[in-house]
Image (cartoon, rainbow, N blue to C red; front, side, top):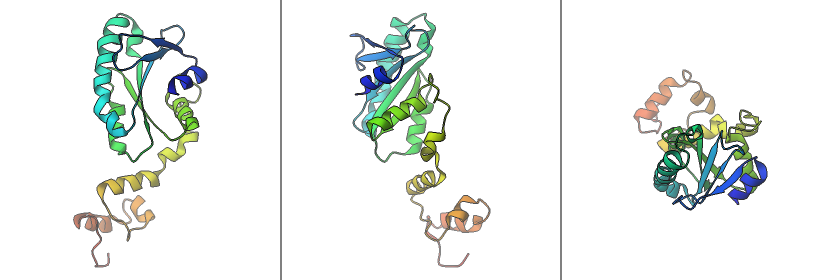
Length: 191
């Protein structure tokens, strides 16, 4: 499915190479001068987290950068795309993997549907008109969703703090500080 999306929606050339141990194919721009895209599909984020480094080190660093494209500048423009089905995942864990620029750039794509997968690729890949267009992805950047995930991760109860107070750093400063000192629960005293 993912290979078909690359072939049908982007101007990329598919390459297969039996020397790749974990990744059975990769894609480049038609001239093989600008980009290399490799991908791995994982059945869960947990699997992704356990295996991506080994796949990257073996197939990308050991083979593509040091043998296949040794001496060619394209070896520094490798994008390793990690796909997994949508599930509850820590934004911090995603961020840590994507910000790791060692060996290659990592892009994590969490998907729920075929069209959603295409849309995310158009948004994240660096060679199309939508690369810097964030208007279609405002849902992934909404403060309230981020706050909810962060608060759940911190196990912080905000039942007695309004969203306005939570977003305004000074409005509920004392209330939030006391709540944090009390393990996330508000005390019975009025603040």
